[in-house]
Length: 390
Image 1 (cartoon, rainbow, N blue to C red):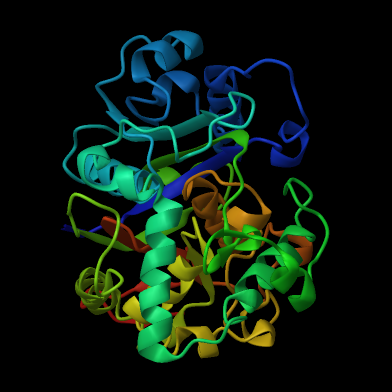
Image 2: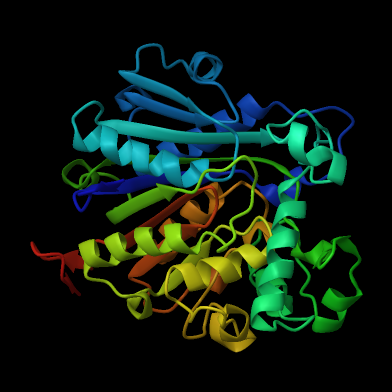
């Protein structure tokens, strides 16, 4: 899956105050109200009229009810995406395709989640697609599967016991610079090693946050985008590939699928990994960051855990990574908030965590559906043959 997408842009973003929503409540919050709030913020962000939205893509909330809440009665295209983390990248790819082929002109991508207040655990409930094979062995969650993959990775490449600590520390450092992030205190290596195992070798601080919240982004053509309120963020290219099995593991840590996506993405844009100013990596669990860095050629194979040095990946370092705090620091919005952070970095709106001179950002998701996009600000133009200029 690859789109010739240089003339399509993200023009508006909105999200919840995740920190405020982490407060305890005695009943589940309304995921549709949260989703509607995020979309209203995205509409205000770009300055379009609500009735200009003619495509609606939803995840964890259903389009019929959300459209009713919003008063969007006659969109030209609607689609519900499953509530898994891989869908945030798929949503943007689908929006790009809809605009590129003329099916819709302005597409709203919306996610809403009340997992914390509804007391969801993302595992252990039973009844999932792998129940006949895996539940009897305790494999009832993605965390258990990622722990098993990382155990294999450690055996193959000799990763130290604290190899993932820099990633957890980095996320918390950036979260402390983000006023809407759930966790506002930094952690140390000692804090990391002192946190309890959930599925060994993964510790509590390797796990994403279960939180309430919502995210929305609005996509349209670059031609339309330049007349709107905020500077457009160009979708320079997007690509994807599935790695589908009856379970959540890949013997190669999704490497082959990531390599295929990476080769098409970098070829299409003329942008190499070392040219990307800001990395936004789907991080349901910290080992996923390591797998992704290697799969997309940011780090040598088997060396991602060494590559991710604390000074290198901070927002003011040479390879900034998950600058809003990621899924272990900001909130677990299943990849959606990473897209908002990429847009804000490219607009220069990230405040204390702003990456200096940010003109390119890459979103990457290593999962059973691998997706990645390279986003640029409007000053970073692609020539007709895919070469990048500034």
